[in-house]
Image 1 (spheres, rainbow, N blue to C red):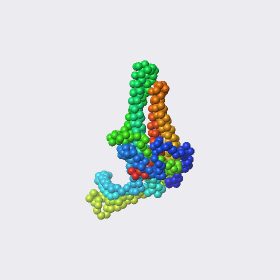
Image 2 (tube, rainbow, N blue to C red):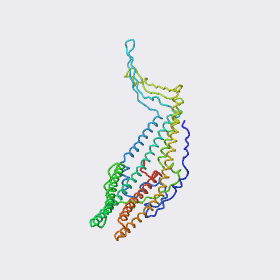
Image 3 (tube, rainbow, N blue to C red):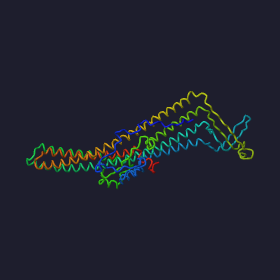
Image 4 (cartoon, helix red, strand yellow):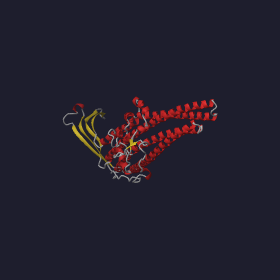
Length: 459
């Protein structure tokens, strides 16, 4: 009774958008990426994609302690138990039965009846596949929960990696801000001395003070952001940040990380490589099997009740010769009038299938958009990183030259302070762009189904 299943056509283009097909072209000095592997992302284990030992340790910790992943794994066990129940429904249940009764008679006596044996009660002979359809539905739901656990695993790995990268960026930004604050404190002392001896105006003094306080504001903001990012990482880990990882944190740098470039493949590859799409398809198969169960409800439901044992009017004679016997009671139940219940159930099952189709197609479209976004970001962020590095080099040279001109009286203090401000902004922007580039590489690994077919530790 289960309808023949046909996979719906993918509602996306056969190729990635033109804006997402470029390859990253940043120079080695600016791009924190390694060479392009030949294997697709789904076949690259996360241990091969992430080479940093601290990050590997954090991912191992999260996989062992994260509560969301633990719930996803327990959902598999629950679905496996439900599948066991549906499989058991295909077999008769054998019970041991013992009964006894004593009933008064009209003459004042007592009739006694004792029986003992084994019995099969209301075992459904599944001629029209109702029970088998429910078993297929439970099997598809079990497989869907397994794919859901793989999706949660990939998402957790990517989230830990991105949170670790954010924490490294916070450390670099804090270091830059602290160095800038120390430099501006020294500059303010010099300007204060010049003001005390009448060599500069109060306006220039206030400008130097403003620049110093601006650095303090930025430092406080970055300290708060670092604390928030560490808290987010701790939640993902399911425990406090390991002491050895915390000890290595000050020496870690984004520029030292290398993440391999990944081939995008074709949009059709996502159907088999992304576990969330496979999960949606299993939900679609479950809805399809539910239609079969709803169809079978229109046909007779044949059940069998049987028993084998002995009966006696005296308890002492229950197991004597001649007391043994058996009963067989088949029953056929054909619905004649149910006020449209079965038709409504079939209509509901068909609508549920249509909903599952829409959800399956939406999961494909969402996956297509995620990969296209990550591919577009890979190229444009590489170019932005290259340009941002060039801008910082130019601002550093500008500050050096402006400082020389200022010391020799050829430039104003305003020019000197403006050069400091521009260099500080460029330093922060470079760290943020490098963070965005690396996080985008992690996002691309995730959206391409990173490690789904290679991670032997996945459920």
